[in-house]
Image 1 (cartoon, rainbow over the protein chains, first blue to last red):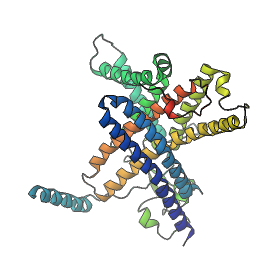
Image 2 (cartoon, rainbow over the protein chains, first blue to last red):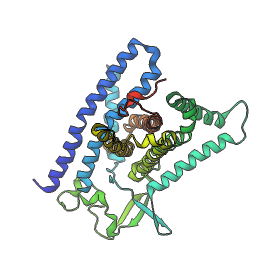
Image 3 (cartoon, chains in turn blue, green):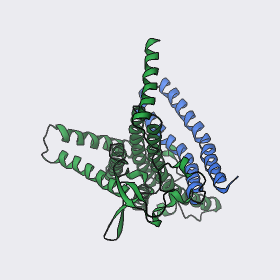
Image 4 (cartoon, each protein chain N blue to C red):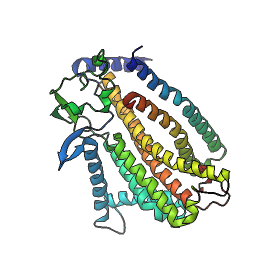
Length: 76
Length: 313
């Protein structure tokens, strides 16, 4: 395998594997938020604000993977 | 059943007709912003121009909205008041009335600039108006450097890109490109946000704020302080790359969809990008707000600052 090929594979693996965890996390957050909405529809603004915040924190992990992938692809 | 068949046929016809009549080439995807000109020795990139345009649009909306103020708002004034009240309500509900009003100018500025530049990046003209320039050797920036040594298949990846073009050829550079597709733009906003957070924290808590980071009460407190310091740096990184990654990926997505199905298929994705543009602006603003709220809240119990401590509505 060539050097550039290994680099492409590494970048793809970095973001691909790195997206699994945040994907699961965001899915769980969404499911729980829907559940909470079903229990208490009046709390919708509070749930939405906190949901977006929590999703942003989960998403940050995927962003670190994206950074690593971009570094592998373009810099290293 | 008949309608489904009709839709499938129409889509297939558009696919084929679009590909035959108006083929769209896969645009050259470049990470770094391209330089389109120089102003007194300072290189002007296409993302900078887009940033200036977004700034002017925000200024124009609020200038129109605040000149000729009426007691009963109409038109532009109504719009400006609606946006302002939306962001102000957000600030006050998260940070409380007094602190919310203190944080409001920065949070609102971030929100308005980011949402305007995200949405304006979807306008026709962005990425499609090009300037032709002679390629200098330095133009092959980081985006192409990786692909260059392997000259085996540049055609497949970049049909028309700069990677294959020899020195001295004419290159097409987009004149304007959405401001958030440049890491420098998002890094600037992230730094503004995080540094302002430190200033607000210092002003509100004084020495108590410093002791959150540098703490000799015990080994665990010292270690937690170190972690807090790292968390501040991680904030900058995640702010920067969240906005950049979402907007840049959206741009690439639209380009690829347009390449695959030239006619019509990109429209739903434009809707998606409108949504993403709003959500990213909202997330940037609300995270800034929450971090500022956390930084100005004194903790006695020595717990690390986390989102569950954010005051609720």
